[in-house]
Image (tube, rainbow, N blue to C red; front, side, top):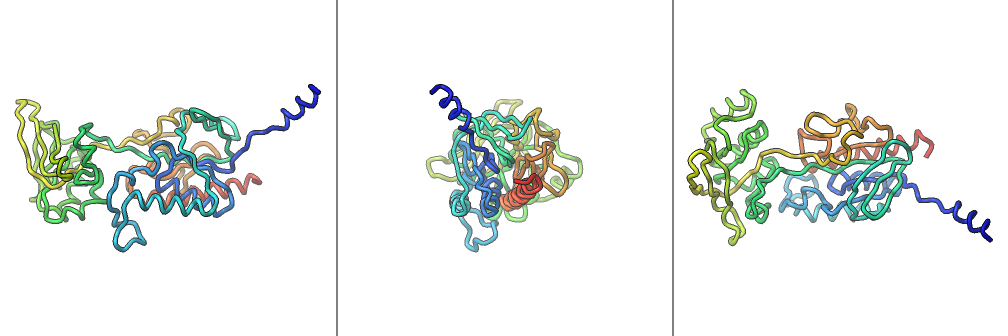
Length: 323
């Protein structure tokens, strides 16, 4: 009797997934769609912040195929259902640890350990916000972190950019194609951006600067739209109010790579490094796509494109391994 029980116990093996995708934004969902259509039955661990930054975006007008635009959360839902249609499985756990030292790879959540022959990392990057309650309530209602995404909505309007690096100036210059006035607010008395970017911004007649200043509050939460910012001069502590129609926060992004430090190769900014023209990481069988490895374009469409690449790379890898 005991011998039979021992035999039965040995025969119980944990399922090894062909592909586990960590992250459920446009990159992860596209990877899920492609791997599902390749009959790889992917498992997507979406996490508690499923959908990525598109969940904070109201209207998306630059994603091909939607002539009249589409709400960010709706776009995520459509791709989600499309991947599900072909057999992708989804769980909303948060990954707390990974072990890529041997195959099958191990992915740990708070409640379970999952095994995979291949892993696609698409955990994205998070916007660095100011930390104001009013800011969070007005995201998508005049507060944005992406000029390329939202500049069109501010035609002939006055907007504020917060930041002092290259990204802030790039956003400012792009916004001048639409906005009537762009005011850059910076905490210091000089910019951190490269000299060429500073020269371009200072020569642009639509751009002005407010130095040594922080944003204390954004108005008007009650009306559900941006009407002004409350500013504080950090040298005099004097507060003033500046009327504006929109605010762009450009103090940087932080890649969601904490899980992968000392495991995957990261660049100086913390983004996952992939081989040129591919999504291969330094570990065979682990791939990365979307904003977690892209600090240049940071668009939903480019994230989706690299998600497709990661799926194809993973499929070919598994095929080469005889799976």
